[in-house]
Length: 345
Ligand code: SAH
Image (cartoon, rainbow, N blue to C red; front, side, top):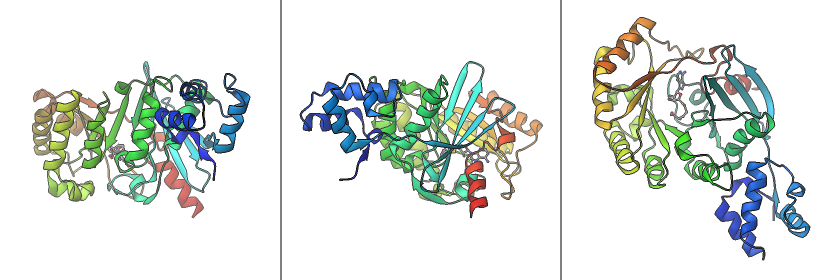
């Protein structure tokens, strides 16, 4: 039997496996302690496990880690890490430092199937899902290798988290486990272009997790062209799924809205966005489009962004505007890994 990556398993799964080989269930908690609280990469370092048990674990499992292929630091404090997955593919993880927050932006897939027209990740096509360990290892690298004290975790890197639902939910369980990383669900945000079955699964998880929906357009006609996932998961159904999430979890939903000059930035768009956000009792996060070379989309002028934002504020919608971070290091989703692939291929 091939060795398995131990970080692909939840605490419950490890407990079961440990009991099956005749050890006590609490050993699983000890393993989690070493993997996630200490960040060890060798079973021999798990000093409170009996030697024979360590050797048995070594026979059946290995402990993975990501290798860093490159790092870019922005003048504004944003750092972008490029990781080599070991199979010729690369993913990006972004660390955004702002005031007293350190937010890590996690990738969930190499590439993306969904092809949002302004996004670099979608443009390069889909390669593969990340495993739970590849998701978790992005955090461990920053926490244990680089000693960053991360405060917030957002699934807003490359890929569509809810299209890799099994692995993302597993990663969330490992993150949230008291014996493991012990990250409160309220500090975790999943962002989706609108994969409704995944929104339902996340809702049913019963965790106090945050959900962001990448809305970007307020009519099906326009959304079909900007966010092609809309053809499969149209607005009406998406809004219903968002409403269900809010009712069931009691959490406030965020609607992300990438502002693109001349496409979705009119006052009429703002009025409809106000109506949708009002109905969902959602916050709106306005994101001036970060131009990806070759795609031809630009952000509106600062003045037009202000007018759009004011309309929402007048409608008593809670609205934030994402500061453009890391533009000098191509921090927008998928830009760096995309460039690397172009160079290689
Ligand atoms: N697939 C998920 C998460 C990854 S993208 C989703 O769609 O939500 C994270 C956010 O960045 C999304 O809101 C996405 O639409 C946005 N984004 C992608 N490319 C962008 C660009 N060029 N400028 C601004 N925002 C962008």
